[in-house]
Image 1: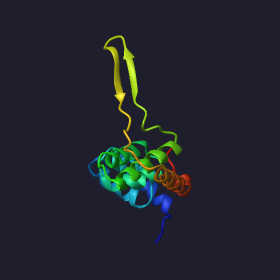
Image 2: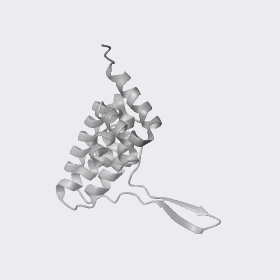
Image 3: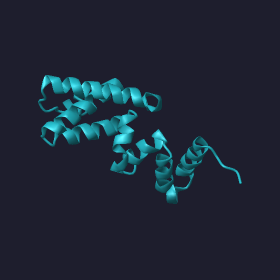
Image 4: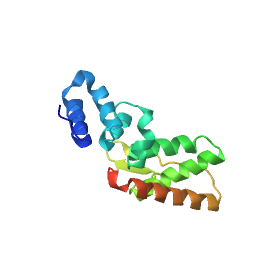
Length: 149
């Protein structure tokens, strides 16, 4: 009996995601459980499975980082304000500015319109911001080798 290593199993599952349309979500979930960062990101983005939000965010998925930071920012508790700040800082380490809104001017549509509305962070004490920044750095360092960017 031949045993494949973890990477081979992940590659087989990812191959089946693309080539077995009837069961692609199941294959994607298997690859995600085996540790595939690509599959974890796909589970969030294509299959709306929130189970994978945090693992994908920790590895640099912009969409997951945005979802988690917005959810936390909209909850309006001290703990959630800290969480929102942590996710925003982590996103910055991966090269994303989640607090910046993006607008565009288009001749066909008239004046500027918002393409992306930045995350509006709740107020947080400076010492809590510093702790959130430290935690974000720690999470980034722990997950750097598996990042998407």
